[in-house]
Amino acid sequence: MIALLFALQVAVAAPIPTFVVVRDGASTSSVPVTISGGEPSVRADALMRALKGTLITGTNLHYTLALPRARMDLIDGIPFAKVDTVTVPLTRAPQVRGGQLYLPFQFVSEVIPRYAGGYFYDAAQAELRTFTVASATVRPAAPNSTTVNAAQTKPAPVPTAGPSTASATPPRMIAATKPRVRKLVVIDAGHGGPDRGMTGPIGNNPPWFVEKDVTLSVAKKLEAVMRARGYDVLMTRTTDTLIALYDRGRIANANPGDVSVSIHCNPPGYNNAAGARERGFETYFLAEAKTEGERRVQDMENESVKFETGANAPKGDPLSFIITDMAQNEHLRESSDLAQTIQDGLIEVHPGPNRGVQQANFAVLRGSYMPAVLIEIGFGSNQSEATYLSDQANQRALARSIGDSIIAYLGHYESRVGGQR
Ligand SMILES: [Zn+2]
Image (cartoon, rainbow, N blue to C red; front, side, top):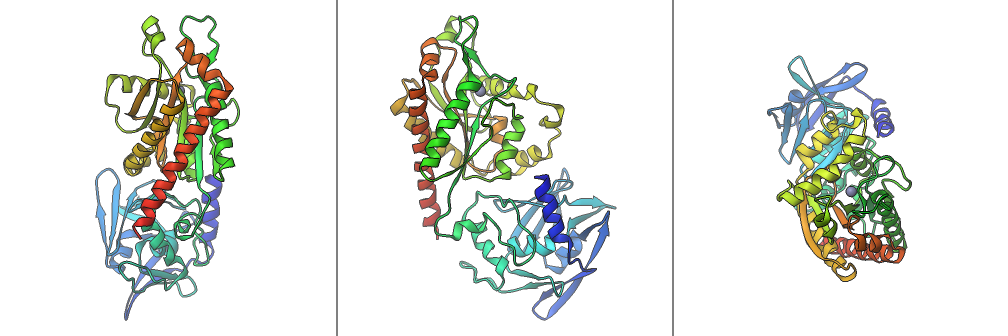
């Protein structure tokens, strides 16, 4: 991510004018470009005036650029902008200095042309020009403008890189308008390294069921299923390593996938005979935990945070802040659909019982810009379920079922999105 942002910065840095002309038909206005700490910036208020937009100052360092055809939400000090449903990475954060909000020059060269609808940046003339946009179909007058259509059509992807100039090809934004693009599935094997997850079965000493090993084994089998069916896969881990909980989301977001699936085994509510009897499978999607049981699972899974260094703690993580603040609710509906599809599929292969689709506020799900679910494939605390989950053939059957459901969900999603055009 750091390297990527650096690359973006270099790409933007080359042709920096001292001011930018905003040309709207016959009328022009100019916006000064100031250099601060070697970084070119424009004042948000001046740019909005030139673009006939409004700079809205919200609470908690929030700002909105209200343009005629787009709204962009920003947070002072956070290097992301939210444009409608798309989260756009910035070369660096917008910053307030002397009571004024300064935007990185990238807004002029890239963000406005790409997302605001109807603007083209001519780097040679240092001019930001308007052109006419038809309401339904964008007839591009500039290479960058095709992305406007893509951005409005498919809400999920976050552009991984977007070098600034007009010749740049936005990698995933434009994908939605192409006939066929390989889908990327992010697979997260829960826990790892010193974080073993839950162990069991209850009453066994030493315990022989270790969650982190089973989640990795099932995740790898799911990976094989997806690759065999022609999907790209990003694994958050492939070995017995600890990935910080918030880094799991970060890994996924640096490589925006079409869905994200996290595999876990259930911890028992009580470490006693009653706990040992609990069994079954459930699939979670992101929401505030509702019931006592859901909250318990959430707390147990979020325990992983204690294995992580302070650097990854949720409070100090600007990414988790912006995710929570802006992107959290975007994919709730999709995630809920995905969870239901997976749960319905597992009924066919898992001895059960079916514990249903649940909601919880998992950190690992909170870090995702894409539809994301967490599957508890069973209770390692229960003797017979631990035996079932440890069996390679059973793991393959679970992986196949989950894979089938992901594919069914993606097909369903694609047809819904396609139906809008
Ligand atoms: Zn777990």
